[in-house]
Length: 193
Image (cartoon, rainbow, N blue to C red):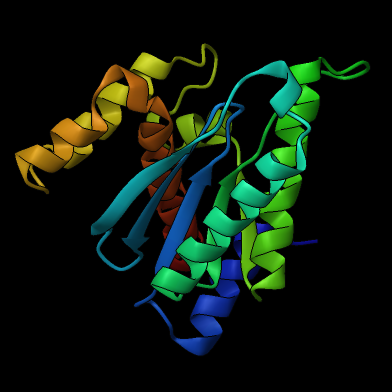
């Protein structure tokens, strides 16, 4: 049985399509970070985030669901991409907190949007990404991710773009870039084997 990365890598090999662009989404309860980049050389074309209201009454509101749907649909249409990598959420077993339920609803609508636009969803957890890129997953640490992405990008893009990413309130964008790079790394490793 093959995992989603192996299937996607075989698709790239069988169709000889190394030159494609993809979207990575880091869903969150109050912000959804994303980046759009190329697979071949990991050129970062655009980044952004959708800020969501965090009032308890708003979490299960149709307005919130529609806002997420419209935003993800807009990104897919704007960039014409069908490949979307999304952070896999590791939630606790058993009873879910109100926040976890709302986050899972947001992820569900992101999936529905991608699939309704004919896209392919590939999931990767932050922990797996951290293991693949840093060879450690013992202590998941946002600062490690932040430092890695900063080092990865500081010489590859202009300073104003780096400054836009690396503010404390933009960790969701940083996570999206980290996941995007890990996705590329995993696929290339499978292709080379």
